Structure formats: C-alpha cells, structure tokens
Length: 179
Image (cartoon, one colour):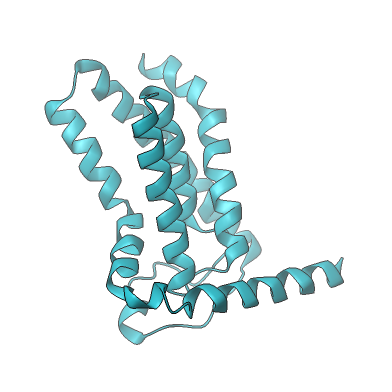
C-alpha cells in the first residue's frame, strides 16, 4: 500500500510541475489567480444573487437548495482535510499564501464546491449551454488550484468527484425541505 501511495505522490509532483510550469499556461498568470479567487465562491454568489433578484420564484428555492447543499459540502471536505492532514504543495508567493484559508490540501475544497454546485445548476437548469458553462468554470477553478500550487492533482480529482456525489446524495433531502 505504501508503494501505491509513493507512486501517486510522484505522479502528483510530476503533473503539478507540468501544469504550473507549462509555458502556455504561464502566459496568463493573472487569469489563474482570478479563477482561484472565484473558487472562493464569488462566482456562485454573483449567480445566486442574480437569480434572487431577477429570477423566477422557483429560482429562490433553487438558490436555497444550493446553499444548503454547499454548506454540507463544506463541512464534509473540511472534515476530510483535518482527517487526512495532507500538506499543501510548495508555496508560490507570499502574497498568494494570504489567499489560503487552511494548511491542508486533500481534498480541494474549491474544486469540491465548484463541481457540487455545477451538479446542482445542471440539475435545475438542464440546458446544454448551462451545463457546459458551469462545468467549464468548475474545471478551470480546479486547474487553477494546481497552477497556483495550492493543490496536488489528486486533491483536485478527488474534489471533482466528491462534490457531485455529495450534491447527488443531499439533493433529494433538500428538495423535500425547500419545495
């Protein structure tokens, strides 16, 4: 089992460096920092606020469901971070370190929340353009977390899988409560 862990860690390190040192991606560092900040929830808050102001009455219910499931998502991924206590990859800059909420890496909370919310948006707004948009944003947020060296690729992959699973499991309960 230890050998598997070492191989995963080596894979993580090589992919982390390949992404964070990629010449094409390095041409737009500001974009990756903006994306990683959007992963703090700002993009989802803006969309939710717009739905509350300009949406239909049912959209207010969808926002409540999304917020409740996101709260569950946060409790679960934060608990896993404390349980696993995986240290974050190397730090990029002192100024970027100020963006970090905690010192643990596994799983990626930004990615977990982004994919969890993408699942919820896709469920309630099953238009292809909505699905492509929310999952593209989620993928870019996850990739940004690797680029800025806040997470290993396996942290992001696990977060991308965990978020939708949590949303899927808690969606029926939330629908019963709010609808």
